[in-house]
Length: 77
Image 1 (cartoon, rainbow, N blue to C red):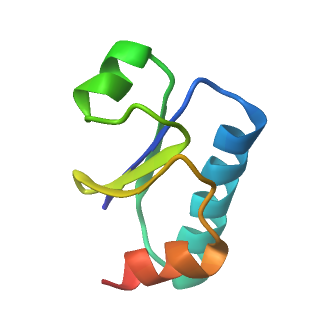
Image 2 (spheres, rainbow, N blue to C red):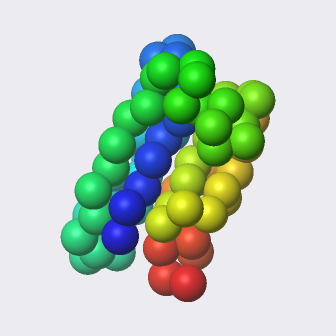
């Protein structure tokens, strides 16, 4: 599983990364979590509001920090 957290490195973006890391550990899922802060790469995903979470190429949330429950639900799909 490939998870990308898109954002410039603000507090909310860092929180989104921590939540995704904790959710993968809790779910027992092995995943690569990549932090993308380059605005051109973020825009190439079609994202114009951060933070955003992309799992296996599918945008799961944009412009907000996901809850841990939301993250776990995405991982179990």
